[in-house]
Image 1 (cartoon, one colour):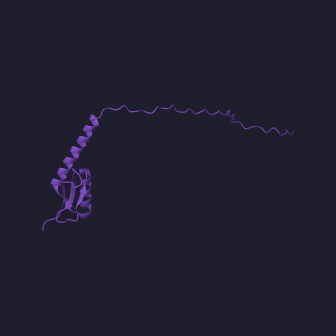
Image 2: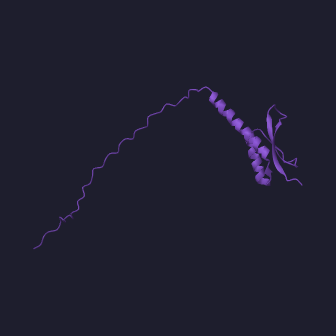
Image 3: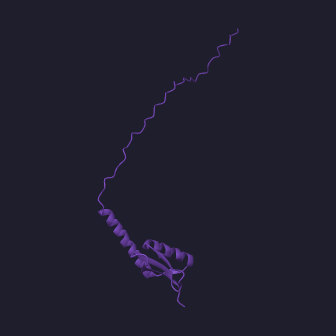
Amino acid sequence: MEAKVIIVTEVKSNKSENNVWMVAITGEEQGQAYCKSPYKAMRFAFMLKKQTGFHIEDASLKALSEEIAKVKAASAESEAEKPAEQEVQPEEKPKKQRKPRKKAEPKVVSMAPEAPQDLIAFL
């Protein structure tokens, strides 16, 4: 009996001209899923691996990682090719200045004890 493995292949979509990624378990037809991007297919394959405990085929992982690298390179190229649009920077408003606090008059505190003024000296 052959061990079940998670495979990921690129297939032609019936609804459009784009290719999609099929994630399936060998020997099971109900375990198939279709993903639009290779990144999503890899995430789904690892989620399936965690749920089922089956291994992902090495060739599938290699093909997915190469395709993800191509997509990242293409997106980085397209970002570099875009003309540098002048970014509209909002006008910076000067910060509001707080009004200074009115300083309270300092209290004079002496360290010498005060003599009571209402005492009368008796002889």
